[in-house]
Image 1 (spheres, rainbow, N blue to C red):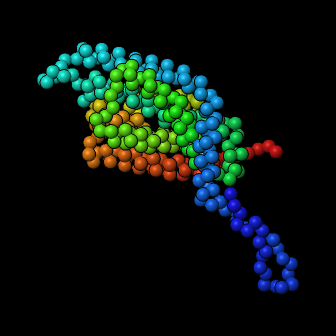
Image 2: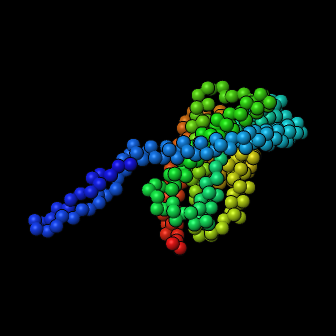
Image 3: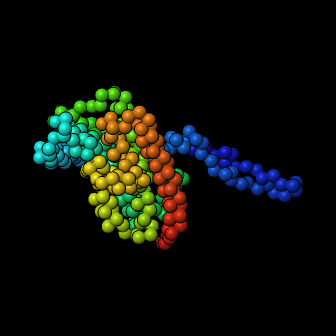
Length: 303
């Protein structure tokens, strides 16, 4: 952080008038701004590192979730009649692709998940938001930075251990094109931004409702469904798939997983990633506008 000319001597037209010292406008350079928010990424990583043992139990729970889906889909495929070519396909996916879809969905969820909505709601409910507003940073960018730091921690301490267990257990195979690994990771990173900004928007409801615990519970139940983590969208009617294309939720999990499965060839891959980028930027701008309007409702009392 820098101050451009901490104190300046005011120029006056009257030589006999006393000189007046004025504070120059406060200014932070771009490198200092970037360094500030990177420090929040680092601090968030270190904060979650202190509770890393808690995440190791998540490896067990995620393995149970994926195993449950594996046996459900195995029974479903075994009871289905084969097609003209002798293969069994449901929703355009074979059994191996369906298991891979479920596994990659949960692996990706372990990377992008965060509790921004709950944390912002807590700040509003407890009055901490008033202190956040007087600090020399943008709260929305800080919370996004902290979400990135949390995801970096999750990637190393949660996502990779899950992959070590899940991949050999269910004999998962990667895409034929090695470049899809990088595209899938990029897509999940964009999904992280979309998920974070959607959560920030939900958290802004606390400015109006004060208590949004019911909203948070509803979101927790519905998000895994709306993002395609629980069930692929191809299993739903055409009208539902059309409606989903107009919503940002497919960009959180469904698009990255279908990229990994090689279901988006050629220009469709660029279109899908471009759609994610558009939703990420759009939700960030929308969340900023909603937040700036919402903070006007903050009333601080006491002394």
